[in-house]
Image (tube, rainbow, N blue to C red; front, side):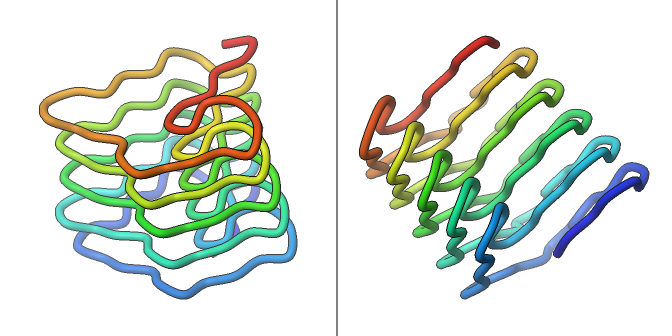
Length: 143
């Protein structure tokens, strides 16, 4: 899924798997958009990006929230094996998980650059993620 110049988006009880992108966002690429929410047992699994955000890549966008959802086994040739955020708003994971994700750069689970606040709440977890550079689970810079 690629989104640009759009409003708020919510995926509920949805799944994306085995997706690939040569650039950013193996599962979802969001640019210049409003808020994005992944809710109610939604999942992104086994996705890959040649650049950033194996599962989800957001740039120049609003907030990202995952509630009761998961990103797993996704990979990125750059940063953010599971999720990559750049020049974006706040990130919140509530009762959600990032697992088994890998990045060649920073942030095996999630890479956050020049973004707002980050919250991992209510039994959320980041597990079994790895990075070729900094932050196997989480890498934050200029946030």
